[in-house]
Length: 112
Image (cartoon, rainbow, N blue to C red; front, side, top):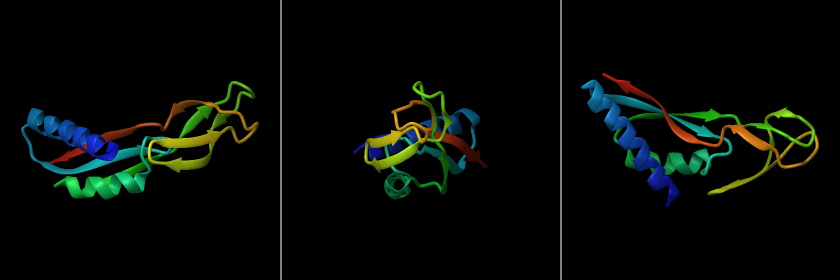
């Protein structure tokens, strides 16, 4: 169900931008973080059925910072599922703080 809600929000944002610019939408670019609420494949499957616009998907690598060992970089993602991620610091195995890569956003609206 999350994918439908997220898809609707992306389409609403794109259409608002199109209306503001007074131009038609030619395509969309959606950025999907490695630690987002949905795996890229799940979002793509639903969004491609919902959206009348050609859509490119861009993966955003997760960036974390570990308070235990001061590591900063990509986490080890042990499990990724619908609204569920298990990740740890690759250096010490603790659960690090997310800096980025945990969102699904409309990155770009390509207008005619």
